[in-house]
Amino acid sequence: MSEIHNILSGLSTDYLPIRVSGVEITWLDYLKAWCQGIDKIEYARARQAGAAHAEVLEANAFGYLGLREYAWLRQAGGPHAETLEAVARRVDPVNYAMSRRVGASHTEALEAHDKRIDLFDYATARARTATHAEALDAHAQGVNLFNYANARQYEGSRTHEQALEICLKRIPLWTYLTEMHGRPDASHAEIVEAILASAESERLGE
Image 1: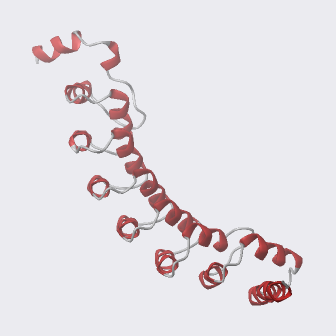
Image 2 (image 1 turned 90 degrees about the horizontal axis):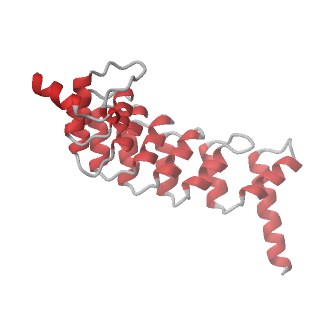
Image 3 (image 1 turned 180 degrees about the horizontal axis):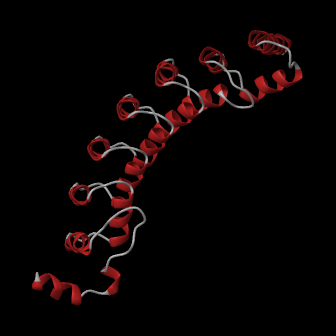
């Protein structure tokens, strides 16, 4: 124990413990982290995100994972094992965390990633009322998920089928919204029919 106190006495104040709200971190925890080359701010951030001392050390030794990114993932609701698995699968940590924050489970986020779906677009679709199955269905049909997300919930809310129709028929959203505002009592089917008829009329008139 005297050796530990000797080490502490020689440390800069930069390495001494800092107070973290809601988390009990001992000076010995900080010392062990410092011995692993871990920045005390990043260590404290990871602990505040819910990680145990041993988990922070394991995450730091994991390799291609910064503790800042690790803390983001933990704050998004992912437990330690899920966080390490996501990183091992080379999932973008920021967009993975965003997906988790809008309701996607660990398994759902990984499935979207494995299907080569942009997780930012996936998270945007989930945030705009799409379920996991609906987001995957839209992707499977070749629809841009970001455009689909806007079609789902931008100046009003539309069903999965309605948003798909807008995207698959290549109707610009601004055209749809313009028609919608001009005909507030028209149904979705009537709006789409009017837009397609107008486009066909313009094509024949060329």
